[in-house]
Amino acid sequence: MSMTMTQKILAAHVGKTEVHAGELVMARLDLVLANDITAPVAIGEFAKFGRTDVFDRNRIALVPDHFAPNKDIKAAEQCACMRRFAKEQGIANYFEVGHDCGIEHALLPEKGLVTAGDCVIGADSHTCTYGALGAFATGVGSTDAAAGMATGEAWFKVPSAIRVVLKGAPRKWVGGKDAILHLIGILGVDGARYRSLEFTGDGVAALSLDDRFTIANMAIEAGAKNGIFPVDALTRRYLFEHRAKEPVAHAADPDAIYERTVEIDLAALKPTVAFPHLPSNVRTIDDVGAVPIDQVVIGSCTNGRITDLRIAAEAMAGRHVAHSVRCIVIPATQRVWLQAMEEGLLKTFVEAGCVVSTPTCGPCLGGHMGILAKGERCVATTNRNFVGRMGHVESEVYLASPAVAAASAVAGRIVAPEELS
Image (cartoon, rainbow, N blue to C red):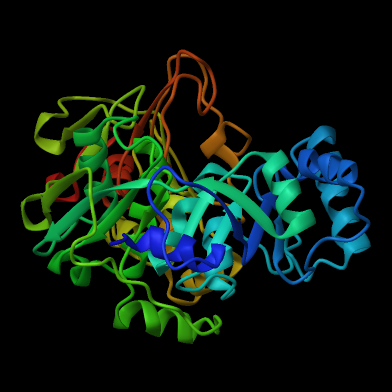
């Protein structure tokens, strides 16, 4: 039987020569992830399994990043719960704030904890980010994460797939965020529900790993179970440089079955913005119109990596944020923060009138470090713009690339960098 990339990875972790779409399987896990919001719930459920020890202290990652650094007493208690559990269980991959921290979906690949061919679950919906490395990675609930921590296994319904053929190369100021917003605009927020989005085509080679992380990260915004990219020389180099374990590359069979094929010409893409209140409500920059803004957020697990910050800094260099705008820049990890400092990017941001934060999810989920008031508008490089996502239910979030976000901060309204004088 022919199989997709995702189906081959699941078959390998089930111990079968083949699996088929719709089949229920129990798969061995390479990594289980949880954060300061989801881990306390999982820890409470873990106790009900009657197990005293996790299945493997080296294959669990706990990351305080959502309400960390702690924003209030409740957040402090959540982090303390996770910290105690990590100490009791001897969890090797617990990442404390300020020591070696970061936003989970940027941090784990950076630490080499995920490699091609892995099967990963995380108690966070954007765990699908790791598909950029050729892994099957998907978000689960805290109870499933607890079961994973206890047994090292998780059950799945094998997903069917949608093939996304990428062609050409994007022009300047256009990148992975524009590509995935364009795709979500085509599919809708549930058009890929419980399906695997499998990216292929000559256009893949034109995308950086950071672009691929962005695209895989937002597969869930189309309802997908996961997003996944082929393993090429760029992937292997990244894995080697980050000391990940030996990759296992799975390629889809030539006659693999796809429910649908979508073709995207990267060269034809324009800067794209998702208007409130759905990631699928997209418009190209030509159709945005005059939209004044109050805040810009550049960061998150979607677009807080070093290339994202380089692009934003290039758009801002020699310019100043509009006096009517607050611009918050959040490097995704400590390593990215240091690199941005060493490259002079942070100096560019501060001189332009931005605030630079320590790594945190913060405003993305309406947690802290940039909550919106009633009637305020924000351009964000984050992944969701639902009602009340970043604060008041009558505020608005517009999703865009780092290039558009930075240019908009300078202009005081949504624009592309080309429009800056």
